[in-house]
Image (cartoon, rainbow, N blue to C red; front, side):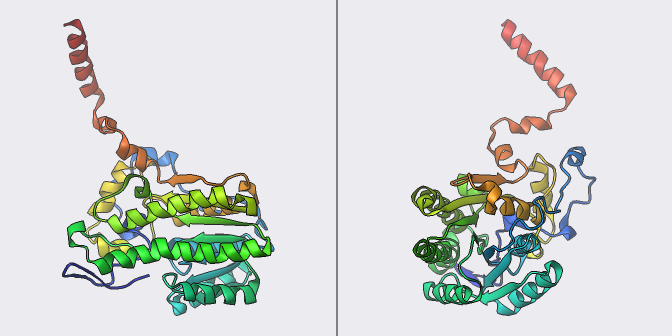
Length: 333
């Protein structure tokens, strides 16, 4: 969802990205220093963890499915047997992705243009999907936009640009499909891709943080209300995951990535295939008793930042000895 935005007089040309800057990186910007020793315990595995055919005879609808995390999730679901329908505003990108994944998996991937900010466009897209595949069994709301900006410099247009995609877009897709599924008496799994700062809030990405937090509340609410119709609702809050492109614009020196990796207990960024595996599980019949769940997927970053004394991990063994001696003296007094 790339677009130009104005941040109180500052043109943020082409900086509205499909995923948050906190969710993407490129291998180009990895730190040149040796990997942390703990990394050997947290090696990524992007091979599909579910049995072949887990999504046979099922239809999956993925917004923002042409690139990044959306593409990764579509690839995994298609390889597991799903007939996938992917949407975004850029039809040429969607069509290329659909063709490539179809060739890899042997299962048809349909590309439908849709601007999730427009409820009429969403309705037309769902009409097209129904004609092609019928109503979906799996819905993944992945379309998103974000940019960094001091909040005092935000224009109203900048605020609307993010909240229209993230919050309104998710609501329009969810409500349109939900109503049709209810009328058809068909169950389904709904999954939203959020962000870890939806829980904590974050400066400099206030529109995204606000909208993602609202999506979390929406999905928790619908998990309670629409379970009676056979609908499950879950949310994944990813931490930093490597996807192509975003950090080339938002972190050209790689300094931010290096600092981010250092504060993640697992000692590395996430991989798209890892998130795709989690999304596939939550959308599968193996997770039929999982609803209303919010799952952090961040290598421990959230809890690492939250703990008041977590920076003590920087203390060396010799420094601990000195500090322990000082503490004992305090007790004696």
